[in-house]
Length: 41
Image (cartoon, rainbow, N blue to C red):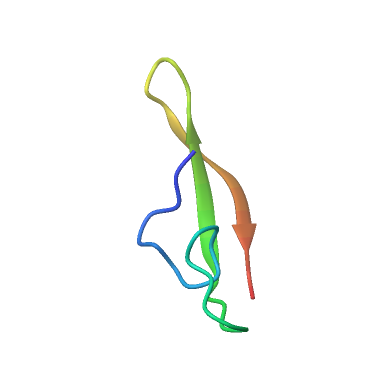
C-alpha cells in the first residue's frame, strides 16, 4: 500500500486538525496498481 505525496492527515503526516483529501493505492505480486480507498476530508 502507498499514499503518494505525503498529504497532511495521512498516517504519519498528522498536523493538528488539518487534513487533505488523499487516495490509498495497493499493488499485487504482478505489479498491478489499483485504488484501495479514498479519503475526502
